[in-house]
Image (cartoon, rainbow over all chains, first blue to last red; front, side, top):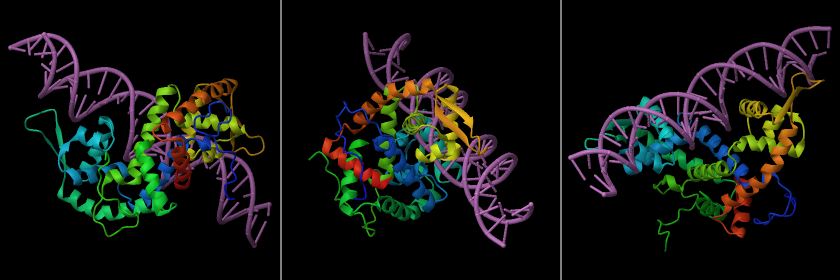
Length: 151
Length: 151
DNA sequence: GCAAATTCATTCGTATGCAAATGATATCAG
DNA sequence: CTGATATCATTTGCATACGAATGAATTTGC
Protein backbone atom coordinates (compact mmCIF):
# COMPACT_ATOMS: atom_id res chain seq x y z
CA UNK A 1 0.00 0.00 0.00
CA UNK A 2 1.83 3.05 -1.15
CA UNK A 3 -1.15 5.37 -0.95
CA UNK A 4 -2.41 4.89 2.56
CA UNK A 5 -4.77 7.82 2.43
CA UNK A 6 -7.86 8.52 4.48
CA UNK A 7 -11.21 7.01 3.44
CA UNK A 8 -12.38 8.19 0.05
CA UNK A 9 -14.85 11.01 0.12
CA UNK A 10 -17.92 10.63 -2.04
CA UNK A 11 -18.28 13.62 -4.29
CA UNK A 12 -21.58 14.80 -2.94
CA UNK A 13 -20.77 14.28 0.71
CA UNK A 14 -21.39 17.74 2.11
CA UNK A 15 -21.78 16.67 5.69
CA UNK A 16 -18.12 15.79 6.13
CA UNK A 17 -16.19 18.56 7.81
CA UNK A 18 -12.80 17.54 6.48
CA UNK A 19 -11.24 19.60 3.74
CA UNK A 20 -7.82 18.74 2.48
CA UNK A 21 -6.45 21.12 -0.07
CA UNK A 22 -4.30 18.43 -1.67
CA UNK A 23 -7.42 16.43 -2.55
CA UNK A 24 -9.27 19.22 -4.33
CA UNK A 25 -9.49 19.11 -8.12
CA UNK A 26 -8.58 22.72 -8.52
CA UNK A 27 -5.39 22.44 -6.56
CA UNK A 28 -4.23 19.29 -8.33
CA UNK A 29 -5.27 20.71 -11.68
CA UNK A 30 -3.05 23.71 -11.03
CA UNK A 31 -0.13 21.47 -10.12
CA UNK A 32 -0.61 19.25 -13.15
CA UNK A 33 -0.70 22.30 -15.37
CA UNK A 34 2.50 23.59 -13.79
CA UNK A 35 4.23 20.30 -14.39
CA UNK A 36 3.19 20.30 -18.01
CA UNK A 37 4.46 23.84 -18.54
CA UNK A 38 7.78 22.85 -17.01
CA UNK A 39 8.05 19.88 -19.36
CA UNK A 40 7.18 22.12 -22.27
CA UNK A 41 9.82 24.66 -21.29
CA UNK A 42 12.48 21.96 -21.04
CA UNK A 43 11.84 20.80 -24.60
CA UNK A 44 10.84 24.03 -26.35
CA UNK A 45 12.93 26.81 -24.92
CA UNK A 46 12.11 29.74 -27.14
CA UNK A 47 8.32 29.59 -27.15
CA UNK A 48 5.64 29.36 -24.47
CA UNK A 49 2.69 26.93 -24.65
CA UNK A 50 0.22 29.71 -25.57
CA UNK A 51 2.55 30.95 -28.31
CA UNK A 52 2.91 27.46 -29.70
CA UNK A 53 -0.85 26.95 -29.49
CA UNK A 54 -1.36 30.02 -31.64
CA UNK A 55 1.14 28.82 -34.23
CA UNK A 56 -0.25 25.28 -34.27
CA UNK A 57 -3.79 26.53 -34.73
CA UNK A 58 -2.81 28.89 -37.51
CA UNK A 59 -1.02 26.00 -39.16
CA UNK A 60 -4.21 23.94 -39.00
CA UNK A 61 -6.65 26.55 -40.22
CA UNK A 62 -4.73 29.22 -42.08
CA UNK A 63 -5.62 32.88 -41.81
CA UNK A 64 -8.12 34.22 -39.24
CA UNK A 65 -8.88 37.31 -37.26
CA UNK A 66 -7.04 37.87 -34.03
CA UNK A 67 -10.15 37.51 -31.88
CA UNK A 68 -11.32 34.38 -33.63
CA UNK A 69 -7.93 32.80 -33.19
CA UNK A 70 -8.22 33.67 -29.52
CA UNK A 71 -11.52 31.85 -29.24
CA UNK A 72 -10.07 28.79 -30.90
CA UNK A 73 -7.18 28.61 -28.46
CA UNK A 74 -9.12 29.73 -25.40
CA UNK A 75 -7.65 33.18 -24.93
CA UNK A 76 -9.54 36.39 -24.40
CA UNK A 77 -8.91 39.38 -26.62
CA UNK A 78 -6.46 41.03 -24.27
CA UNK A 79 -4.37 37.91 -23.88
CA UNK A 80 -4.25 36.94 -27.53
CA UNK A 81 -3.09 40.40 -28.45
CA UNK A 82 0.04 40.07 -26.36
CA UNK A 83 0.76 36.59 -27.68
CA UNK A 84 0.39 37.67 -31.30
CA UNK A 85 2.47 40.79 -30.68
CA UNK A 86 5.35 38.63 -29.50
CA UNK A 87 5.01 36.17 -32.35
CA UNK A 88 4.99 39.06 -34.76
CA UNK A 89 8.12 40.51 -33.19
CA UNK A 90 9.83 37.22 -33.96
CA UNK A 91 8.60 37.16 -37.50
CA UNK A 92 6.45 34.05 -37.07
CA UNK A 93 3.17 35.67 -38.07
CA UNK A 94 2.02 38.27 -40.55
CA UNK A 95 -0.73 40.77 -39.80
CA UNK A 96 -2.94 42.69 -42.17
CA UNK A 97 -6.29 44.43 -42.12
CA UNK A 98 -9.36 42.83 -43.59
CA UNK A 99 -10.47 44.54 -46.78
CA UNK A 100 -14.21 44.46 -46.27
CA UNK A 101 -14.48 44.58 -42.47
CA UNK A 102 -12.03 47.17 -41.25
CA UNK A 103 -12.37 46.07 -37.63
CA UNK A 104 -10.69 42.73 -38.27
CA UNK A 105 -6.98 42.13 -37.92
CA UNK A 106 -6.06 39.07 -39.95
CA UNK A 107 -3.28 36.83 -38.64
CA UNK A 108 -1.43 34.21 -40.62
CA UNK A 109 1.78 32.23 -40.42
CA UNK A 110 4.82 33.71 -42.12
CA UNK A 111 7.18 31.42 -44.02
CA UNK A 112 9.42 31.34 -40.97
CA UNK A 113 6.41 30.56 -38.81
CA UNK A 114 5.36 27.65 -40.99
CA UNK A 115 8.87 26.33 -40.95
CA UNK A 116 9.06 26.61 -37.18
CA UNK A 117 5.75 24.84 -36.61
CA UNK A 118 6.72 21.84 -38.66
CA UNK A 119 9.87 21.44 -36.67
CA UNK A 120 8.14 22.03 -33.33
CA UNK A 121 5.29 19.58 -33.76
CA UNK A 122 7.65 16.64 -33.35
CA UNK A 123 8.80 18.05 -30.05
CA UNK A 124 5.24 18.82 -29.03
CA UNK A 125 4.38 15.15 -29.43
CA UNK A 126 7.24 14.27 -27.10
CA UNK A 127 5.94 16.83 -24.61
CA UNK A 128 2.51 15.21 -24.67
CA UNK A 129 4.12 11.84 -24.10
CA UNK A 130 6.27 12.95 -21.22
CA UNK A 131 3.32 14.64 -19.57
CA UNK A 132 1.32 11.43 -19.79
CA UNK A 133 4.27 9.20 -18.92
CA UNK A 134 3.05 8.46 -15.37
CA UNK A 135 0.00 6.75 -16.89
CA UNK A 136 -0.39 3.55 -18.87
CA UNK A 137 -1.74 3.90 -22.40
CA UNK A 138 -5.16 2.81 -21.19
CA UNK A 139 -5.12 5.25 -18.30
CA UNK A 140 -3.95 8.05 -20.55
CA UNK A 141 -6.85 7.51 -22.92
CA UNK A 142 -9.29 7.40 -20.02
CA UNK A 143 -7.75 10.49 -18.47
CA UNK A 144 -7.94 12.48 -21.65
CA UNK A 145 -11.57 11.51 -22.13
CA UNK A 146 -12.50 12.76 -18.67
CA UNK A 147 -10.29 15.83 -18.90
CA UNK A 148 -12.08 16.91 -22.05
CA UNK A 149 -15.37 16.63 -20.18
CA UNK A 150 -14.04 18.83 -17.41
CA UNK A 151 -12.59 21.47 -19.71
CA UNK B 1 -22.86 9.34 -32.20
CA UNK B 2 -22.30 12.80 -30.86
CA UNK B 3 -18.52 12.61 -30.88
CA UNK B 4 -17.77 11.59 -34.39
CA UNK B 5 -14.05 12.24 -34.12
CA UNK B 6 -11.18 10.83 -36.10
CA UNK B 7 -9.73 7.43 -35.17
CA UNK B 8 -8.18 7.39 -31.72
CA UNK B 9 -4.47 7.85 -31.62
CA UNK B 10 -2.50 5.46 -29.48
CA UNK B 11 -0.31 7.39 -27.09
CA UNK B 12 3.00 6.12 -28.34
CA UNK B 13 2.19 6.37 -32.01
CA UNK B 14 5.01 8.58 -33.25
CA UNK B 15 4.69 7.63 -36.87
CA UNK B 16 1.39 9.42 -37.33
CA UNK B 17 1.84 12.85 -38.83
CA UNK B 18 -1.40 14.25 -37.51
CA UNK B 19 -1.26 16.71 -34.66
CA UNK B 20 -4.42 18.27 -33.38
CA UNK B 21 -3.92 20.88 -30.73
CA UNK B 22 -7.33 20.17 -29.19
CA UNK B 23 -6.30 16.59 -28.45
CA UNK B 24 -3.10 17.40 -26.58
CA UNK B 25 -3.07 17.03 -22.79
CA UNK B 26 -1.38 20.35 -22.24
CA UNK B 27 -3.96 22.30 -24.17
CA UNK B 28 -6.92 20.61 -22.52
CA UNK B 29 -5.25 20.87 -19.13
CA UNK B 30 -4.95 24.60 -19.63
CA UNK B 31 -8.61 24.88 -20.58
CA UNK B 32 -9.74 22.76 -17.65
CA UNK B 33 -7.72 24.92 -15.32
CA UNK B 34 -9.25 28.05 -16.80
CA UNK B 35 -12.74 26.68 -16.31
CA UNK B 36 -11.99 25.86 -12.71
CA UNK B 37 -10.63 29.34 -12.03
CA UNK B 38 -13.77 30.84 -13.55
CA UNK B 39 -15.98 28.68 -11.31
CA UNK B 40 -13.87 29.69 -8.33
CA UNK B 41 -14.18 33.37 -9.16
CA UNK B 42 -17.95 33.08 -9.48
CA UNK B 43 -18.28 31.67 -5.98
CA UNK B 44 -15.45 33.37 -4.13
CA UNK B 45 -15.17 36.88 -5.42
CA UNK B 46 -12.67 38.48 -3.10
CA UNK B 47 -9.90 35.86 -3.15
CA UNK B 48 -7.98 34.04 -5.88
CA UNK B 49 -7.35 30.28 -5.83
CA UNK B 50 -3.69 30.71 -4.82
CA UNK B 51 -4.68 33.07 -2.02
CA UNK B 52 -7.25 30.62 -0.76
CA UNK B 53 -4.75 27.78 -1.03
CA UNK B 54 -2.38 29.67 1.24
CA UNK B 55 -5.10 30.31 3.80
CA UNK B 56 -6.37 26.73 3.70
CA UNK B 57 -2.89 25.33 4.15
CA UNK B 58 -2.12 27.65 7.04
CA UNK B 59 -5.39 26.57 8.60
CA UNK B 60 -4.33 22.93 8.32
CA UNK B 61 -0.81 23.27 9.62
CA UNK B 62 -0.53 26.47 11.61
CA UNK B 63 2.55 28.66 11.48
CA UNK B 64 5.37 28.13 8.94
CA UNK B 65 8.00 30.03 7.05
CA UNK B 66 7.02 31.76 3.86
CA UNK B 67 9.19 29.55 1.68
CA UNK B 68 7.99 26.36 3.29
CA UNK B 69 4.39 27.40 2.81
CA UNK B 70 5.23 28.01 -0.82
CA UNK B 71 6.54 24.47 -1.21
CA UNK B 72 3.39 23.06 0.34
CA UNK B 73 1.13 24.90 -2.06
CA UNK B 74 3.39 24.60 -5.10
CA UNK B 75 4.53 28.18 -5.42
CA UNK B 76 8.08 29.39 -5.85
CA UNK B 77 9.53 31.98 -3.51
CA UNK B 78 8.78 34.93 -5.77
CA UNK B 79 5.15 33.94 -6.25
CA UNK B 80 4.38 33.14 -2.64
CA UNK B 81 5.75 36.47 -1.56
CA UNK B 82 3.22 38.37 -3.63
CA UNK B 83 0.38 36.17 -2.44
CA UNK B 84 1.32 36.60 1.22
CA UNK B 85 1.78 40.33 0.76
CA UNK B 86 -1.78 40.64 -0.48
CA UNK B 87 -3.20 38.44 2.26
CA UNK B 88 -1.32 40.53 4.79
CA UNK B 89 -2.70 43.75 3.32
CA UNK B 90 -6.17 42.34 3.97
CA UNK B 91 -5.33 41.37 7.50
CA UNK B 92 -5.74 37.62 6.91
CA UNK B 93 -2.21 36.66 7.93
CA UNK B 94 0.32 37.78 10.52
CA UNK B 95 4.05 37.89 9.83
CA UNK B 96 6.93 37.81 12.25
CA UNK B 97 10.61 36.97 12.23
CA UNK B 98 11.89 33.70 13.60
CA UNK B 99 13.77 34.17 16.85
CA UNK B 100 16.61 31.75 16.28
CA UNK B 101 16.95 31.83 12.49
CA UNK B 102 16.74 35.43 11.38
CA UNK B 103 16.35 34.46 7.72
CA UNK B 104 12.91 32.96 8.28
CA UNK B 105 9.69 34.91 7.93
CA UNK B 106 6.96 33.13 9.85
CA UNK B 107 3.44 33.27 8.49
CA UNK B 108 0.27 32.43 10.38
CA UNK B 109 -3.45 33.05 10.15
CA UNK B 110 -4.82 36.09 11.93
CA UNK B 111 -8.12 35.85 13.78
CA UNK B 112 -9.82 37.36 10.75
CA UNK B 113 -8.02 34.89 8.53
CA UNK B 114 -9.17 31.92 10.58
CA UNK B 115 -12.69 33.24 10.53
CA UNK B 116 -12.58 33.73 6.77
CA UNK B 117 -11.23 30.24 6.08
CA UNK B 118 -13.97 28.53 8.04
CA UNK B 119 -16.57 30.38 6.07
CA UNK B 120 -14.82 29.82 2.74
CA UNK B 121 -14.30 26.08 3.03
CA UNK B 122 -17.99 25.43 2.53
CA UNK B 123 -17.88 27.39 -0.69
CA UNK B 124 -14.67 25.66 -1.72
CA UNK B 125 -16.44 22.32 -1.48
CA UNK B 126 -19.14 23.64 -3.79
CA UNK B 127 -16.44 24.79 -6.20
CA UNK B 128 -14.91 21.33 -6.27
CA UNK B 129 -18.34 19.86 -6.93
CA UNK B 130 -19.18 22.23 -9.74
CA UNK B 131 -15.83 21.63 -11.37
CA UNK B 132 -16.45 17.89 -11.30
CA UNK B 133 -20.12 18.18 -12.22
CA UNK B 134 -19.64 16.96 -15.82
CA UNK B 135 -18.50 13.60 -14.41
CA UNK B 136 -20.32 10.88 -12.55
CA UNK B 137 -19.12 10.11 -9.03
CA UNK B 138 -17.24 7.11 -10.31
CA UNK B 139 -15.63 9.07 -13.13
CA UNK B 140 -14.69 11.86 -10.74
CA UNK B 141 -12.88 9.46 -8.44
CA UNK B 142 -11.10 7.90 -11.39
CA UNK B 143 -10.20 11.28 -12.81
CA UNK B 144 -8.78 12.54 -9.54
CA UNK B 145 -6.72 9.40 -9.14
CA UNK B 146 -5.14 9.87 -12.58
CA UNK B 147 -4.79 13.63 -12.19
CA UNK B 148 -2.77 13.14 -9.03
CA UNK B 149 -0.44 10.84 -10.94
CA UNK B 150 0.04 13.47 -13.62
CA UNK B 151 0.64 16.34 -11.20
C1' DG C 1 -31.99 54.90 -43.37
C1' DC C 2 -30.78 55.59 -38.87
C1' DA C 3 -30.41 54.97 -33.91
C1' DA C 4 -29.26 51.12 -30.88
C1' DA C 5 -26.82 47.21 -30.09
C1' DT C 6 -22.88 44.38 -31.22
C1' DT C 7 -18.25 43.20 -32.54
C1' DC C 8 -13.28 43.93 -32.82
C1' DA C 9 -9.08 45.49 -31.25
C1' DT C 10 -6.65 48.06 -27.86
C1' DT C 11 -5.33 49.70 -23.27
C1' DC C 12 -5.07 49.65 -18.22
C1' DG C 13 -4.87 47.50 -13.82
C1' DT C 14 -4.25 43.47 -11.04
C1' DA C 15 -2.63 38.73 -10.07
C1' DT C 16 -0.20 34.60 -10.81
C1' DG C 17 4.19 32.14 -12.33
C1' DC C 18 9.06 31.48 -13.25
C1' DA C 19 14.16 32.57 -14.04
C1' DA C 20 17.86 35.00 -12.42
C1' DA C 21 20.33 38.05 -9.45
C1' DT C 22 21.18 39.89 -4.77
C1' DG C 23 21.96 40.45 0.24
C1' DA C 24 21.53 38.53 4.76
C1' DT C 25 22.06 34.71 7.54
C1' DA C 26 23.27 29.92 8.71
C1' DT C 27 25.75 25.71 8.21
C1' DC C 28 29.60 22.92 6.88
C1' DA C 29 34.43 21.44 5.97
C1' DG C 30 38.83 21.38 7.20
C1' DC D 1 37.78 29.55 13.63
C1' DT D 2 37.02 30.57 8.87
C1' DG D 3 36.24 30.23 4.05
C1' DA D 4 33.01 27.84 0.97
C1' DT D 5 28.18 26.49 0.55
C1' DA D 6 23.59 26.62 1.24
C1' DT D 7 19.19 28.67 2.51
C1' DC D 8 15.73 32.38 2.85
C1' DA D 9 13.59 36.35 1.38
C1' DT D 10 13.46 39.96 -1.90
C1' DT D 11 13.58 42.25 -6.37
C1' DT D 12 13.40 42.64 -11.41
C1' DG D 13 11.93 41.28 -15.89
C1' DC D 14 8.96 38.80 -18.79
C1' DA D 15 4.69 36.18 -20.09
C1' DT D 16 0.09 34.66 -19.41
C1' DA D 17 -4.82 35.68 -17.87
C1' DC D 18 -8.93 38.28 -16.97
C1' DG D 19 -12.16 42.31 -16.00
C1' DA D 20 -13.36 46.71 -17.41
C1' DA D 21 -13.25 50.69 -20.24
C1' DT D 22 -12.69 52.83 -24.87
C1' DG D 23 -13.04 53.98 -29.79
C1' DA D 24 -13.83 52.42 -34.44
C1' DA D 25 -16.59 49.83 -37.48
C1' DT D 26 -20.47 46.84 -38.50
C1' DT D 27 -25.01 44.89 -38.01
C1' DT D 28 -29.79 44.99 -36.37
C1' DG D 29 -34.32 46.64 -35.50
C1' DC D 30 -37.84 49.27 -36.69
